[in-house]
Image 1 (cartoon, helix red, strand yellow):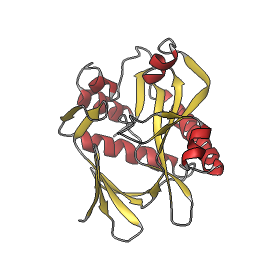
Image 2 (spheres, one colour):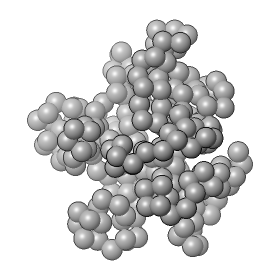
Image 3 (tube, helix red, strand yellow):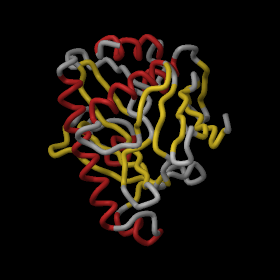
Image 4 (cartoon, one colour):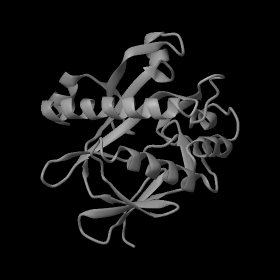
Length: 231
């Protein structure tokens, strides 16, 4: 297959038609803009299966690039022009916002907080305000409003879903892209690589923070999320 992009955690291949791609989930994991990295056999299959189930669950509520599962480690998706923005939805304070604003870890945001970051490894993915986004020409006001609406809806649905599994959705990073006709779609993945999940009772992490902060075995954490999801 023709390789279109080889990223830190996924490889994109040309799909069976010009408007499709194949997303393959690798066994690699990185943190700190790739400074910390490892290969964990079995990790790619777990993030793929979790993403597939969540995209399928959302398909009637939030339009996305997901088309269908191909195998244990990949799915078929619509080919998009990805917007250079990461949309972060925060239900509770942790990670960078704690350091940035001096908030206590675990403080709840009501309503959830939505932030935009510039997708640029060279600039270390800086936080952007709406004026910055418009000045850089990264998205139109209509696209920004649409992304926020989709992000909030996705967050609400997944918050309820995970709560029923005994997990708190702390925050999540979403990406969006456009089809050739300009239709905005949810893209990338939906997995513990791109969201924080805590046990609702103990606040134990079941996400990439386990790797970032050396808090245990990442594969065990992801397997527990998959188990609760019935995978």
